[in-house]
Image 1: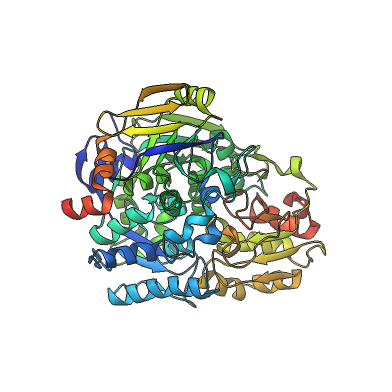
Image 2: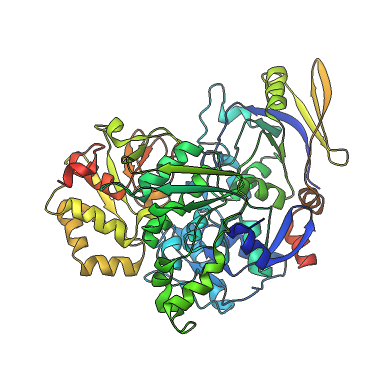
Length: 174
Length: 428
């Protein structure tokens, strides 16, 4: 399994699309590692500094419909090569969500009020999130606070996370 | 309880359900292009699994950057080309015979009612216009599709649009889908199939239905679907005439791929669209839509007519009918990309290319080109493009650029005026 623990990057906007996550001009790369410098390059968001804010982050917390637009798996790959294997949002675009699990990464959906709660209580502070894969819990920690939040994930998705992705599973079973 | 077309297709293709709400489907078609497929190919090679499930069901094309613009894109093309050759994939469309995937594959008769189709491209939803279940997927799903001929999906909840009345002259499928995306929002159909039904769809050509289904993804939809009818049979006839004794027989067979009257829907939307106006986007999301009248006079720098949404012969005919005998404004440059070589040839034969050239358009080879700013037609920082494409995301057509999505008619009228302009002005 991949690493599902570390510092959190809060992105306070809905509908962040795949072109913002990784612009099409970089889709000519044929290795995942080559995408590393370009993650979120076209995202303009008040308070977000692409050069400084991605460093050492492992988890993204954002709003609704993250990853909408293109089918490019370069979006999860660009996250992965930057050490980000978990995105937590109200919901995801279908293809992006499936791509995350197909790569053995987490795209966790939480109700709107839980997402709002995370933004109100943790955004702007140094926050760490750890995913407890067996107990289906998100452990959130900041300097003054630590708590656990339950999440639900389908059996298929969890199997992909544990098996490290869809290719290995499909090869064994189909 | 009856079934929707998507449920019927799922039932006919289900291999198994390894987990709750996980339907592994057998695939009739796996489509490939040179941007998302090479990494699947190199990964399969690295795993020692360089095989394909069925070379006759896999179709491949170089379309996003063609001819190659640099060493990297040349390498992407080479990986796809070598792989197609190695595995005996006969339907590989290389430079000179290539066109935009979602235009050339239907044109070759590769999509039939009731089929399951995947491709590593979000606009794969286009092929639902034939009464198929067609979904864009990532490279990993594509890789498994190539290797095993299967793909896993969650249950397809369906929403239905019943579109009554008839579209006014100067109003097209593009205007209708922009209106629908505005109603749904970009997250409104996430994880859902969108059925387009009603007299407006019945009267539409296959080209217009493809335009409509093409943009289902912009509302988050898994697939857009139109029911197969005689229009579908007529379009496919040259490819299926040996399978059926008559068009009526083909229609009878294909009619199994129509939703039952008592099928269950997540939601049904019913509109009379007789008063719909030409529509256009503003901002950076495809649901930011206004009528062209509200946006009239908005300055643009470039016009682009083409793409998997609106680069078909019908689109070129509409644009040319407005441009005939006219010149584009000195304040803009304009590009037209016929979506396939056959469309290009037909446009030449019909004199459309001459009209575009006389008006001052640059005519390019068939390619995805400017739509996603990967090869030609890239915008400079701060520039705006009036485009018949499908996405107006920030920087989509070039960093710092803006895209206004519109119909070919609106794009043609806007080229003449150098600013967003209502096309019926030129229809008088």
